Figure 1: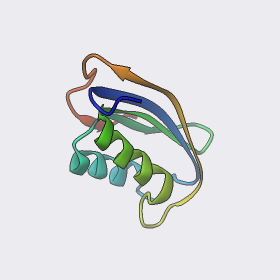
Figure 2: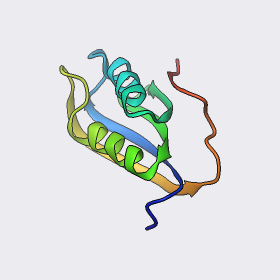
Figure 3: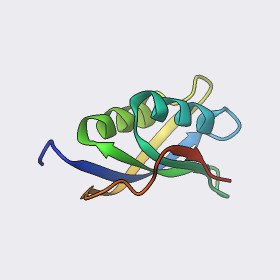
Length: 98
């Protein structure tokens, strides 16, 4: 895979990830890493979203989503889908959707 350009991926995080400030920490981490996209809770107890940015920053965010999360969360499984190179960012910031 090329290491230049912009990348995007969708994610769904399983485990104890609702009611533990997972979305708040995800938004904070995304802003810290400087990626754009969104995060939201699902009706079936997971957290889903999309991340876009440079390959290096997207990988940092992927590692955080898979291995760290919020302090009180428990991540059982992280699923990353639709990873692809994109021409332009589709978002201007990272936000929590409701």
